[in-house]
Length: 246
View 1 (cartoon, rainbow, N blue to C red):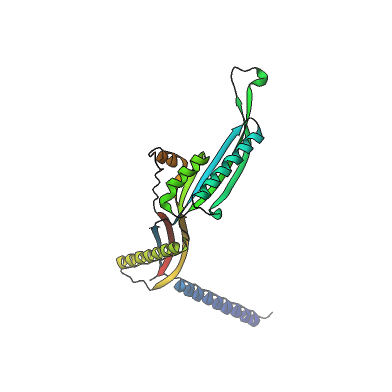
View 2: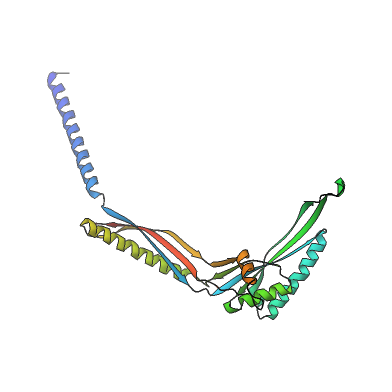
């Protein structure tokens, strides 16, 4: 190859390298300019509302050294409880079976001969879940159930018919708080919010108010005429994460 051709080839390669290098530099500068400047904020809200219904988990527990005896006694008591609840004014669909369990356990009895030291006991547990809308009568209903054969109250849950509307209100309030925070940050920084860049829901919680077993037992011990049950409000919580441009 002649010297002239070598020079031409070298010059061509140099030009291509400069062009490629120049294009890369321009792309880098353009990409950097396109990166948005954002303020990220966290918004949260908590709203409460009076409950509209109560769900009561009643339990009928029976024990015997024979499985069939535990099951039979449990069935009799459960039938009596259902009958009493229906006579109190509840509808069939407001009284449903939550769960049914039959299991056994062994107890060690000291002082007995080796072959008789263990006692096997069978336990049947029938859970009945009752839904009631007349919240002032929750205590009376518990008394009726206990008198007719229920021997355990697992919990009382005070709830809303449909929490969706309250959840949406909480999300709206959380979003508004996130926007106010962004405006405050921008004002403190000497800039102005120009728009919403991104937003996402982080969490929504619906929290019925629940009496647990020990709380129910404590309230039952406070009154002799009727079990006093005082519901608290139901709570919903929502939070969002938002980014605003400036």
